[in-house]
Structure formats: C-alpha cells, structure tokens
Image (cartoon, rainbow, N blue to C red; front, side, top):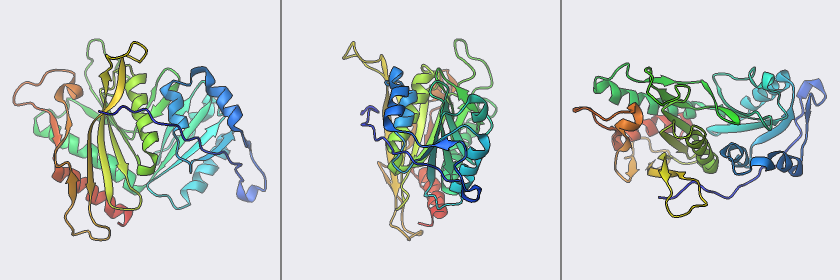
Length: 316
C-alpha cells in the first residue's frame, strides 16, 4: 500500500484588507523566508506538514487580534465556497486562538510557531462527516453495543506541538489500560479532492502525534466539480526495511470511490471497488470481538447513500 509522503506545495501569502475600517488591523504580510525559518527546527514533524500541505487557494495572513480574525472568517464565509475553504493565520497568541473556535469551523493551532488553520465547512462537508458517523453508529447499535462508544464533535485535542479538531471522532467511555483517554480512538477528516495532500497530512498528524492511540483515520475526499467521492482508511503500518525510517508510517489501507453522471440524480451510483469500507472491531473497541460481534462494514449501498446526500448539497 502507498504511504502518505507527498511533495509540498507552499501557498502564497497576502495582505488582508478590512473593508469599512479603511485600514489593515493587526494584520501584515509575511514572506516564505520568514515562514521557513520559523518552521525549520522540526521540518519533519507532521505538525509542520499540516501547514505546508495547505492548498494553493488558502487565504493567509498574520493576525494578533481576535476581532480581526473573526472579521476575516465572516468575510470568507460570505464568499462562494466549494465544500471546504482554509484560512491560515500567523503570529496568533494562544489566548486568542482559544477565542475563535465555532461550530461552523475546524481549527488547528501550532503552539511553537503560533500558526493557526481555520477550516470553513459547508453543508456538503457536514453531510459527509455526519452521514459517515451515523452509519458507523447504526452498525454499532445493531450489534447491541449502544453506549460502548460515543461520537465526539468539536473537541480540541492537544498533541506535542499542536492542538487540533477532527470533523468527527469516536471515543471509549470506559478507561483502557495503557491508553490515554484524551485521544479519540478513530477520527474522520473531510475535504475537497484538490486538497488531498492536506487530508493525508491531517491523517498522519492524528496517527503519529497520538503515538498510535488513534487507531484509524477515515478520509472523505469530495470532488467539488463532479459527483465523485473517495473514502479511504489510513492506519499505522510497521516499516521493516530501513533503520532510518520511523518504526510506523501512515498507510492507506482501503480506498473506495463513488461516482455517477453529473446532473442525473436518478442514475446508478458506481462504487469502485464494490466492497465494504471496513473498520476493525478491535480498532474501535480495543478488544477482541465476542461472537456475534464483528467488524464494522459500511456496504457499497451505504456509501452510495452518503454520497447521494452530499451531491444533493452540492447541486451536482
């Protein structure tokens, strides 16, 4: 299976004008040299990868004022967004980063570089993440395991250098020996297909920053232009062929794509390969299944239903 190492595309930086205020408020432009010097101390870190893998259309600025950052967020929300839009702010004090979170955004904050990513989400994005979460919960309930696991949304998790919110995640209500309860067991990351490298970097952050506490990440990559969605599961796999590599690397275990002809909502949905998206029982519950307990398998039909709802939101 392929790993998640990708060449880095570095977005450009811009000045941010604050409309009716007739000035630039606590925001300045920056240069690639400044950014690179700040981040050079641990350039191999997945924390840095999450910022360097931002798509080219990311809206970026330096901001030290909560009011200025909120204003930019509201301005960007008022513009057309295709599924997901990323904003990146530099030189953000931790006290300010804590004040700008909301239910319609997802946030990542690097405490060392004081860099903050704000992800603006749309109806299509939330339909995908919640649809997947609901499908997993339905399978769990059908096994009679209601209450054995619970979904978590909007919770900020602190890693070594950065804090981050997932689109969806699952946690265990009961303590497991040797496991840190602060980390979710499984997370979901949703984004546009033109930001696949960013989604892969996010998956790597969850798996490696948690040191394996997060067992699996589900990536949902939505094509903003045609009815096509890619569902992937990413896990940590051991590396045995080189002493110079990390002992475990994030690896795509499964990749399933749904599609149909544009503007034909009654057309048949293609699922390729036509196999279930599988989440291992032990990955989810940190124990072996006791029959009739089994792996969570989201059938091709279930993936098709989730996709259909997303495409309706996209008007595709």
